[in-house]
Length: 356
Image 1: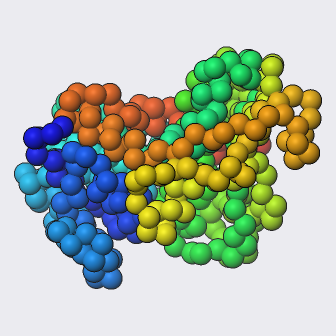
Image 2: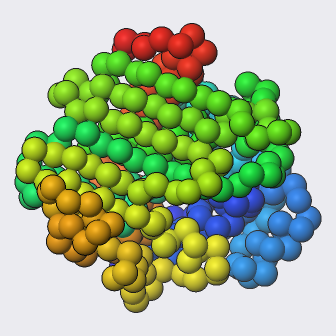
């Protein structure tokens, strides 16, 4: 990419997603430059200018999109309900778009966006950073190497202990907000299951609101049957007083158990930036591979965890735009995940297994 002017990126939203994830990762990517941040919050405008002194600030998405001719890519890190209308506007303005998950509230909306992007010949990519978590990368290597044999069961957990709701749109019971853990952390665990094991034929789910004052699901379980026979059991919860393993994967030859979360989010929240040693974790957190014994009593062998690599996502976006490389996460992949999430919502509501 040497000698090629960097692509000018307009970022919509400077809350958690925009300021902690997208802005630092964009700024760290060769071939991209953070040109404009759109936020109506004066406090967040000041924050953006302090963190990126050369950035321009827009007071609204409309103001940013009015500068479409001065931008090469738009990134949407705005509330979920704005993803579809803003992505549509950006694509119609002739701009490639990255959208934070979930891409849309329904699979039908996601496919409509995909069709619009294809019609315009524009990139539409979905930010699924958890594909570059350290544990997920390690598991993919183990599966590819045959270390587990044939995988029979995939257990994945994103559990937290947050007994008091924080409020805000993410915990709103208004369906228009597309809040709740099913569409938040559930987007990650379902995406990972589909990447690893392919299409799903049946979905069962339990989705509960446990905390007083909460209005959206905060404790949800999904059981997926994949077309190849693998069963995925996925847990997302804000009410787990004791956290289970992040991954427990059982195969015909061995199993893999991994505790603890990938360190990249915590590092970004602390203001750290990608560089030497990025994504590495302490050896004490490495998982174990084995059979017939519990990893908690020393069973199996220690499996070194590969470094996490969130910067790989935007590097792939830049490669796609500058050199015609593949889209790292397509809108149609996101639509397939939304098929599962919608089925899970119906299953939880009706208490039945839903066939896809």
